[in-house]
Length: 433
Ligand code: UD1
Image (cartoon, rainbow, N blue to C red; front, side):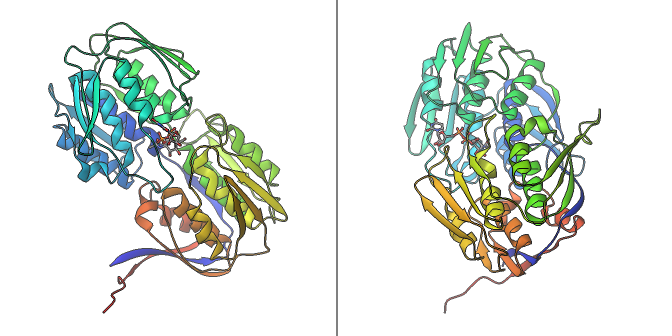
């Protein structure tokens, strides 16, 4: 048996929705707890499948785990000497598992971490992770599908310059360097809010990091860190998903839990598409957010994905979907990953008119899409197909919901709350006699 989402469209989303912590932050925060023995507690944790995978990974490294999905907290008891091996069995399920590499080498001076598979979004190298650790004094080799890293005398500070502001490499190298001897300077780092979040948590644990939120981090190694209680930053990609869903369906949605300063270019593009975007101000981070009032029909937009504060690559499927129902011709240029176009093939099944030329997707809007059966190839593509199904007339069936549930908590419930007709339905597997 497998599950599919069945959407009856078209829908106009309206109401309030709350976004919890960012998948792309919480997994790294959990990995970072390995840097200090004792009990760390992370709050605002999203109820998603990837958090459960990271819990299991840390459990197998010897950590005690107390995960309360309802309360949105995970308490992690890190032993004096955690294990150093992250098996392929778990790593293959989730690419972010690679983020235990930096903390393990930094604290245990050794790690064996399987090389991840991850999302079907192009070849995603790990050379910067490897070279950075080598510059910090570790020997790193690839053996039988595992990164095997060792630094018997510990890591030592150095100057690193990343050829590209990779999110994962920045995180791994910061986590590795906080316990290194001396000063590590890392140039051309990623500046995503999730990087700021992990740096702030490391500082709360006793790390010495300067330049947080800029392209240059200066990390002065300390002998040890202490456990921490930390609230995860809100998920700007999930918030952006709701924002585009409101704009594409002509809806009126108020998003709580993520403020507009985490979505700098996104808000501008929504306005260009004809939406009204208003901040919701509150002292409480779970209430603060923004409201998006969609136009009756969106105007097409031109978007280039770029590292933060540029337009996030993870919102690419939603831009294409909005352009697919816009009044005119829109353009999306993908600058971060090679092959995010599997989504486009599926979207075409709903009647979208998209032509691909290298890393450009030219989209000619149509009055309305028509519901069809489609398959999710990764988290965001899956959510993008659901949003497309909301704009389409008739029944859309999205399979591959496991992908979507890796990143979106209570997706069907939240859509229903906003007035959509969506169900999670069990379907028999196809059997060829
Ligand atoms: C993270 C996010 C992902 C987001 C991406 C870009 C997580 C779990 N995932 O992925 O959702 O789309 O940031 O914002 O946080 N690269 C190399 N060598 C390296 C590292 C990266 O060539 O050593 C290339 C990748 O192949 C890719 C680009 O750099 O083309 C961006 O990768 P990176 O920023 O590292 O993304 P992730 O951390 O994998």
